[in-house]
Image 1: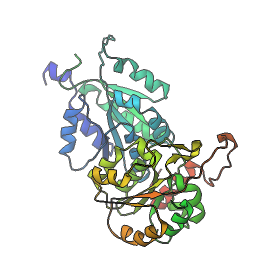
Image 2: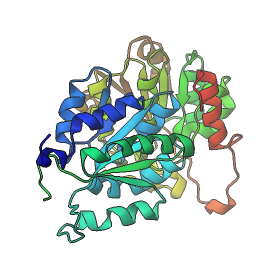
Image 3: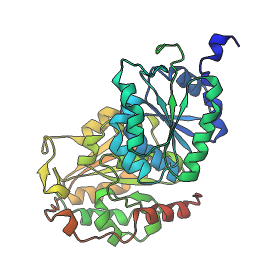
Length: 172
Length: 195
């Protein structure tokens, strides 16, 4: 693996982390951070994709799946997460749903200077709801996804994984 | 328009062992249902989400029939759920919707364009293979066996009499007999789901 590849996040690794933790359904809305992951998931018969047209819908769907004995993952962008505040509160936190939210971190720059308010407010939003989050920037960070799954299960709460890399380097 | 409780009594005769998400009909349903552990009265976790929750249950439990009593106020907040249901097409999902043309729990203010929305047409346009609308109880009663006798997803809009609440929330009489946590624990036990 070249230094450049090593500094990126391999979507195959992300998919393997999800499968390793028993994910059965991915409730998702497309975003530019996770498109390559979507293409991999689409080709994987062990995962069922549940497409939504607004991110807030993902939380009640995940709540139904979880109470029916499945392991959903929510795959959305930070912009939609922020619009979903009441659904996150009521359907995920309120119903104690152990769900990992893979959140595309639009606007993230690791040097702390960004030109996108979506990035500015993402962590503040999660902190306001008391949602734990793990930053995943490169393939070396991928094991943090398992940590998120374990924490969600143990605490019966949603836990976020901030996907802080657009695979094609859009944010760099 | 017809009373919610009368409609639910008709449904009860055809319920079988369906999981029922009674939505805003829960106050009446809990007095009519004979299978409480397969009922999922959640109150109002966050408005607009009942259809998503019921869809998730239906996807998770394909061998179980899931019947939802949605409301038009909830659905208007999340119309995007309709194409999601239609694409996934769970054959065990029966989507009923109570339309009282208003936000009854906040004092009866009308929903947008309250008297002129054809929800069955919206559902059909979103891709539901079958959709119906009823404003008379006898027609609903006559059609229900056929509606439930075919695979889902199906959408059924029901014009119901508003039961407007104007009492301040803190002074309302609590009708729930189980907490939300208890409801979900009972359901998971019924379904043999751990956690």
